[in-house]
Length: 115
Length: 115
Image (cartoon, rainbow over all chains, first blue to last red; front, side, top):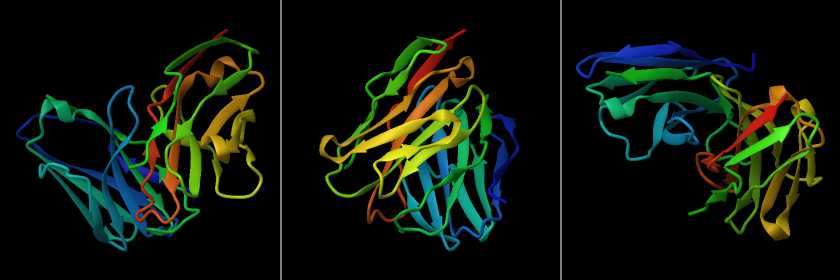
């Protein structure tokens, strides 16, 4: 299984809602990532988890709260988002954190619209 | 900080034309190099990667890329494009020894192939 899955595929939420994005991989990877991709732009790194611990937070606003409950799952909790947070949210995983010759496998993304 | 430049933002070709997309990076040391493709409405897929060895790398769907260390370049090529190659193409770099496998993406090149 060389797949990263993400749910939901689409999400529409109001600015006062609380929602969560989910990501799952069963490749035994111990590094997982959240990226944000705006239309016609490259993905931007948000968070890196290594061995279920948050290793990198790229100065992401606190209205985005990541969680890694186990080595296969990665969540992104959303609260009080703004319309400018509308984007495609991508999850990725790789074998290990900080190792060379490592590629990241991307999920299909969740397309988020904040009204 | 390293940067990745993709010189062509938009490319329009007719079917059967040859393709070359430029990618240059600024990091002076050893790097891992990647080309990703994103078809309309779909997720990022890895086209090919270079870690070491033969600088001419063959990927999926007839794509290849050549790593020229002296030019800090990793250009993507395909001898004969098809309408189905219409997509956004991203070059990405991870410097060796970079903790967290921090991918730096280029700005992307939007390819349109006319039938």
